[in-house]
Length: 437
Ligand code: NDP
Ligand code: HSE
Image (cartoon, rainbow, N blue to C red; front, side, top):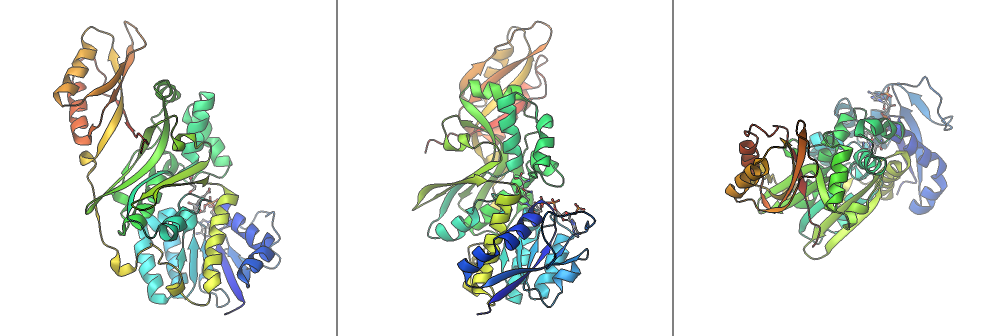
């Protein structure tokens, strides 16, 4: 056993500074938990012409990543610059130089994870990426280790702190999302490109990782059905609440034989469901298994301190078995690499859901009848039809809740309905989950 693990850090932004802060300020606690020292030897950021609120006098600072990824006196590299490239190149270089890797970069793992895991296995090093899903919540460790005895039957997650923060403030303060996004950015929750958050891409990155880990599949981020929250208005949130629902951006994954259903979209959840109580930048991950039944993990999904907590937990896991490579840890994706297969993604038009539909219509006789007739024709039954406003000249909203139907069938019905001269082509389609298991 070696008594010291020497760490190099790439990126001194929100999470990088948090990770450095823990390594410096919690050094004694870490040593007591591990029986060995974890020392921050060097850090790199392309913008070093600023002041840091941390004492880096014992840390070598550089603006060149290769000073970290190829250095002889570094055992483990923490990558916190984000994005696909040059993060992939830096991580590849570090692995090829025999360094263990810890990253919070879900974009990198979702897109290049399988290639990096294979490279790490070849070089006998570990990759930790707990912070990539659920921020500070140890949900990947829970799935990979705590639930290892189960076939996983479903995953439902609020996986993006920025969107959950925005939806919470829209509901509580009646604001539209653009008014709240700046605050989420200044709190350090949002991605460098916040469209990744609000368009659901960040949630899709995370869902593709956790789904692959759950079902023993390779990772297929670009096959996740993805819709974000940018079309949701404060009025939609209030209308959903009147019906007994809250709108949450959910990532949902379920196995169906040799296929996997993976979808990210704003979802109506009953107000009394546990997942509906998750507000602000908190995330929650509900995982169901054939023996354990239902589990739920909850905690801060974004921000410096919670995310850095998950990053350093991974560093400590690797440090505990250091200098050995991956052999003493559970495999990164929870299955031995030879047992992971390519599971096909279920086409979205084969997925069954219940729906909330909002049509904008001219308030003329027969319009609602036209909508309900076409839905009945397609075999879609209704739970509720609501038209509150009346206005002779403007379009008014007509809201419907359907019982379960098939997405392909629903889309055919919408295409027929929007041919009606008094019905606008823009229809808000939200999916609904019951959570009554
Ligand atoms: P930041 O943008 O705050 O930090 C990234 C830092 O890396 C910046 O200082 C950036 O400089 C620097 N950087 C970028 N490219 C390079 C490069 N080529 N060489 C050297 N330095 C570089 O991002 P975060 O700290 O918020 O996020 C880091 C990672 O953690 C991302 O993968 C993110 O997805 C993930 N994450 C973030 C969470 C959060 O709550 N913020 C939560 C969970 C995961 P510059 O400022 O000049 O761009
Ligand atoms: N931008 C991400 C979020 C960071 O808001 O959840 C945490 O992964």
